[in-house]
Amino acid sequence: MGAMRAGVGHYITNGYGGSTTFARRMAGTANTAWGLSRALNPSEPGSPLDRAQFVGKSANEIMDAVVEAVRPHDGTQDVESAREAVSEALTELLDEFPDADLLDLTPEQREYALEKFVANDVFKRFELDVGKQVMGKAPSAALGLKRMQEIKEYMAEVVGAAFRAQLASGAELTPATVAQTVQAALKDSCRVFEEYTE
Image (cartoon, rainbow, N blue to C red; front, side, top):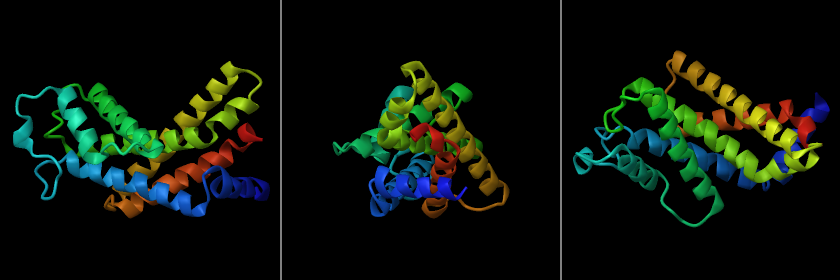
C-alpha cells in the first residue's frame, strides 16, 4: 500500500503538473460545478441565465447557453475539456430524464447533472494527463482503450457514491465539498489503477 500511495503522490506531483497546478485544476472543476448548479436553477438569485431569454428555445440552444455561461471559451485545454464535460452531462441528463425542462429542473435532476459533470470532468483531466501513459503501457491499443473505459466507469462510481453520501447526510454541495470529492476520486482511482501506468 505504501508503494501505491507513493505512486499517487508521483502522479499529483509530476503527472498532474505539480501540487499547485493540481490544486488549481481541482478548484476549476469545483467552481465549474458550482456555476453549473446556479445556471440550472435560473430562479436562484445570481443565476447567470435569465429564464425569460429562452422561452421557445430548443434544448440544444439552452444547452449551448448553459455551457457558455458556465465555462466561456478561453482557448485553454482545461476549459475546453470542462465545456465538453458540461455538454456531456446535460446530454446524459436528458437521456435519463427525457421530459426534463432545463430551465425548471427538479433538485434530483440538478444533482444528477452535477454528478455527471464532475465524473466526466475528473476523467477528462485524468485522460489529458496520463491517458497516453495508460495506452502506451498496454500490450495493445484495444486493451488500452478497455483500461481507460474501466477507469472512466470506476471514477463515475466513486464520484456518484460520494455525491449520494453527501446528499444523504444533508451536507450542502459547495465548491469546497466538490473539490474534496474530486480529489478523493482521483486519488482512489490512481491507487486502484496504479499498475496501468507502471
